Length: 331
Image 1 (tube, rainbow, N blue to C red):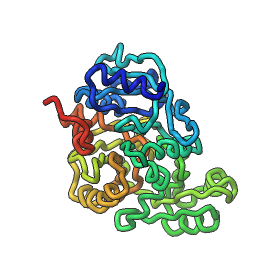
Image 2 (cartoon, rainbow, N blue to C red; image 1 turned 180 degrees about the horizontal axis):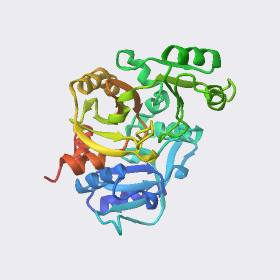
Image 3 (cartoon, rainbow, N blue to C red; image 1 turned 45 degrees about the horizontal axis):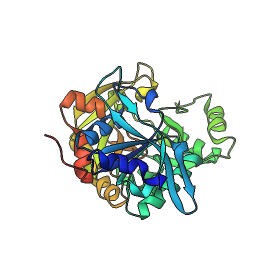
Image 4 (cartoon, helix red, strand yellow; image 1 turned 90 degrees about the vertical axis):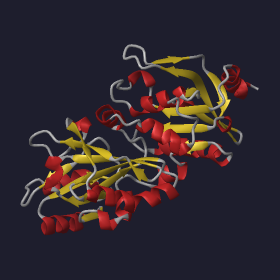
């Protein structure tokens, strides 16, 4: 009975579509930049009832996936962008859609959350993105499924192999497979005296697998974020330009964003990757491209939507809802 209380609440308000969002604390989001907020605005504009769920609110009772949830209203107001109702319990399968917008890292708690959401997915709830694909598609390794798009790279935990790759390419980026936001990314130039300690630190002395990529000098022109909606590229990207002397373009690492149209090469990369994304239920994805090369495929909680919408006038959030067939645009 209690599992139906929030759904009944939305039905009483004349709302026919119930959308849950699993996310980090909403009070902590960056109002001006948060992509999840834009998705919620667009869904609410279409008459959907929203339900707010934090990751620790997911649980399994017997064989039924459930959640502690709160009715959510969102506003385009920097001083008051959300309002939460009273918490109650619902059955996840009673939701029509769940937006899985928990930020990385993709640790075991994240994996457990996907197992719980997958129970509802089997009963017909649309999970964005598909749970199995969230688990399967490591954001660094997934890109290597498209070798025609990638720069020279090596994935290994063995220092001797990593050093040989560095000797061949002379200027190399080393990074962990589970990193985010530019954290723990190291550049080692030719004859770098810190090469050994970099590898010892990242591999935990040969116990942890990492990625080595040939350094791409085109990073000075920006690390391009290309948003993909159900396998199709948004026609503009956000080039995240590093600070002077930096090799990381991530906004979290101090980079600045510049909106630009996709190049022919960008569009080609998108067409190479797009069909696989669509087949795997990866409805909303961010490709990272430096120069002519695909470097990462972000599947967990892609960002940069707000910056692109602000500069181009595109309604990317509504494009995603259209692709998912969620309600009708109020336009």
